[in-house]
Amino acid sequence: MKITDGIRYVGVNDHEIDLFEGQYIVPEGMAYNSYLIADEKIAVMDSVDGRFADEWLANIEKESGGKAPDYLVIQHMEPDHSSSIAAFAERFPQAVLVSSAKSFPMLKNFYGVEYPDRQLTVGEGDTLELGAHTLNFITAPMVHWPEVIMTYDSKDKVVFSADAFGKFGANDTADDDWACEARRYYFGIVGKYGAQVQTVLKKLAAFEIETICPLHGPVLSDNLGYYLNIYDIWSSYGVETDGVVINFTSVYGNTKKAAGLLAAKLEEYGCPKVAVNDLARCDMAEAVEDAFRYGKIVLATTTYNGDIFPFMREFIADLTERGMKNKKIALIENGSWGPMAIKKMTAMLEGLKNIEFCENTVTVKSGLSNENIAAIDALAKELCE
Image (cartoon, rainbow, N blue to C red; front, side, top):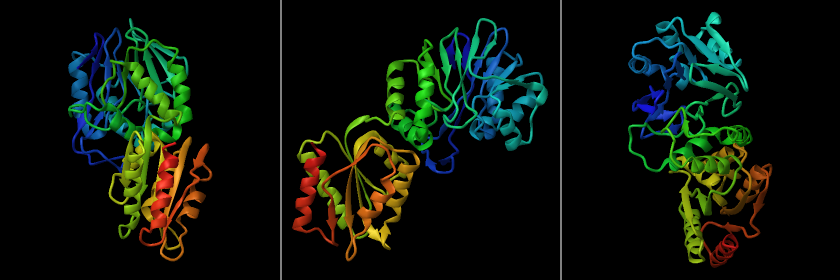
C-alpha cells in the first residue's frame, strides 16, 4: 500500500487474536503496522507480532523490489511490535538496528539477542540520512513505555508515532468511527500518561505534519487537526462530550432502578447526552473510556460485605490507576441495614486531582422509596446545572 511516493505500508492484520494485551476485547482484530521508506538506503519502521513474521518479511521484500533493507528503526519494544526483530536480523544480516538506548537491553531481556555490532543508538534531535529522506528522532518516554521514540520524515512530512494515535481493529475491517476504538485504546493503554503525551504533542507542534503513521490502526492524513486536538483533550483530561455517564452495579435490581430513574430525569431536564453502563455486564474498558469522555460521572452501587460491590471496586481502581481528574462525581448507594458504599467510594476517589463531589447523594435502603425518588430528582437537577 502506498503512503507517499517513497513510503509503503508493509504491516499485517491479525484476525486470530481475541484479547489484546491479555485483557482488551478486539472483535475486529488488530493491525500491526510497519512501513518501508525506499531511498538510497532503505529503512523499515518497526516490526510486527512474531506470529506474522513470514508475512511481514514477504511484504518487505515485495515493496523493496528484492533489495535488502539497510535499517530497522525500532520505536517501541512491546512484543506486538518487536517479536519479529530476530527473524528480520537473520534474513537481512547487514541491516542496522536503530533505536533508543533503553531498547537494546529490552531486546536481550525479551529474546536473548543483542546484535552489539549492528546497533545505532539515537536520541532527541538525532537524524538519520537515507538520501532524499531525513529521519528526525523524537524521544517519547512513557508513551507508553520508557524506551519509546517517534520519527519525523522531513521530506514527506510524515510522523511515525509509535503507539500514539493508534486504535483497536484490523485495517481490513470497515470502521468509519475512528474515535470510538481509538478512545478505548487510548484510555485503556496510554491514559495514565497524559502528562507525557502532552510533552510529546508540544514537540510535534514544531514539525509540519501531513501524515501520521501509527503502529495500530489506519494511516491518518485527512483532517489532522481533529486527531491532534482530540489527543490534546484526552491527554489533558478534558471533557470531550458534554453529558453524564451513569455507572452502576446491582444485585437484585433496585440500584439498577435508581440508575434508570436518574437517567430518565437527566433527559427530562435537558442533559445533552446520558450514557449508562452496567459494570457487571459491559466491557469494562468501554466504561473506563466513557468515564474519561464525559465531565460528569455517577457511581451507583451496593454495600457488599461492608465494602462496595466488586465490579464497582474494580472500575474505580481503573480510574484511579489512570489518574482521572477534572470531573464532577455523584454517588448513589444501596444498603439494606448498614449502607457504607458512599463512604468507601469517597475514600477510593479522594486522592484524585480536581474532583468535585455533588452536594446531593442518594441512599437506598433495599427498595426505592418516595424519599429516594425525591433525592434522585434533586441530584438530576444538580447534574444539569
